[in-house]
Picture 1 (cartoon, one colour):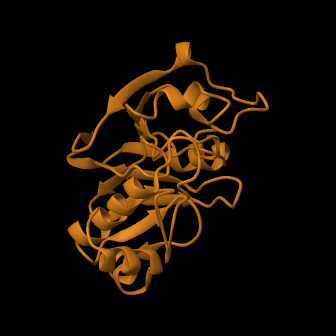
Picture 2: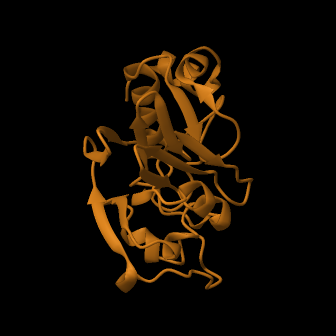
Picture 3: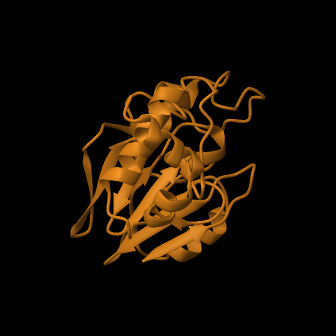
Length: 206
């Protein structure tokens, strides 16, 4: 079961994926009451963070469970100069968090299935996408007919190009993409219509 809690330009979408009474929460940024309602009496096994920008992690302090984040973005969670919390509104604290550092190819159990970690740097150095069944959660890496910014702290245009080519070329076309903002899409659509992918594909691998 997949639940989406829609965000906006200021707050990312959040997602709850559940199977046989166990759930994982992706990028908890808002709508705490709605998340808790959908969670009900199911077990929250962990929080998956696509990257450490503040608009994806506002609610990290609201849950007592393991937090999975790429090893290259873990420090950014607390770097308020660069994560968006420069006005001092961060509610979570390092001492209260059960951080689990992840890397490309790691797998996270959800009941009897696995969530695959795909390293997709470019928006930030430690950006990742999460693949579960036919669902791909891309954070701020891949959007519908668009890609994420690469000009923020630890972002890199060359990494972003490689990440976009990796996702769209190497995964099945029928996979549904749930980005951190805006509408869902499919990899098939992105192969046909994403102008950045089309341009970078013609340029060849970096």
